[in-house]
Image 1: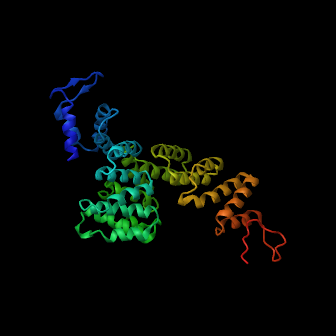
Image 2: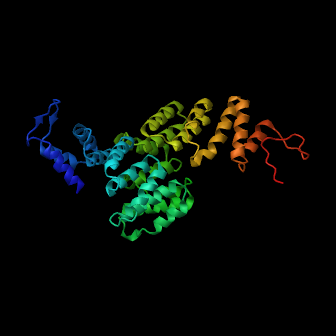
Image 3: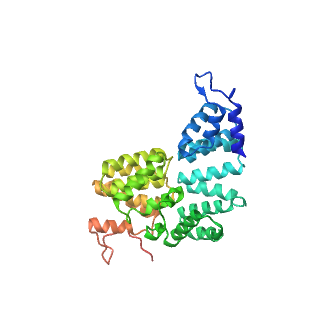
Length: 363
């Protein structure tokens, strides 16, 4: 219905059926051309976005922002799409379609908590019940809530799904079973037709690197990146692949592009920090570790990785300071004590003459 409204709105903006010029000196196409754009394949999305850019001004209706956000989402420009959908939600915060798109964008930007909040608002909708259950399952897996993900999956009637959705269902079921550990069973049954589905292609490339030939993996991935040059997830897989084949400089550039395609992404910063640590660039790794918010689930790894960076850089003062302060917060994390033993050979005597600042004694 809303797409019909957009079509009517766009056509009404044209003065006649013939091509004309507006005040900017830009040619406005005739109605037939606009109609063909609105019903075209993904490759035409950018042209539609360009025309919408000309039409949207301050004070435009929320639906115009929603529509551009939808086309940006289809072309996988998630950061720009998020700006538009947030603008639409300001005026219509209870619109089902707006909330659904906002949740899908948040999921693709790896803002999983926000995505879960959006999907919870609309999970009672009956018209798109299966879609919402799939989205709730995926975001629950990303948040390591495997039991909750299984609960949502169990509500989906798999026999009523089309084939691609059945394959997607199987992938999610396997993810719940192996708890996100790379496993060849995750990509079992995925063929060339399957990985044309955006949901399946990402799981395929995230898990198939170790189970397919490098030549095939590279060709498949580059083909999709050529089709979707703004997809941060495909570029992320490309960066991982380059790192795996020891192409450090190229991998570094790829990671920089990925970071630009995302908004603030703590999960990505942790991955990039580990990448630099693996290549002994500890000062750069610290720059990314320092960007991570302290309230994130992965923060438990951040003090430990910072400690290792300071240790390998030879900064023993900051190393010990980080270790001691982290031990106060993470009292049950023995990695800090083990790291100290491994690199300094400090042993605790039975009489505790040499008192260790990292040792927690329970009476």
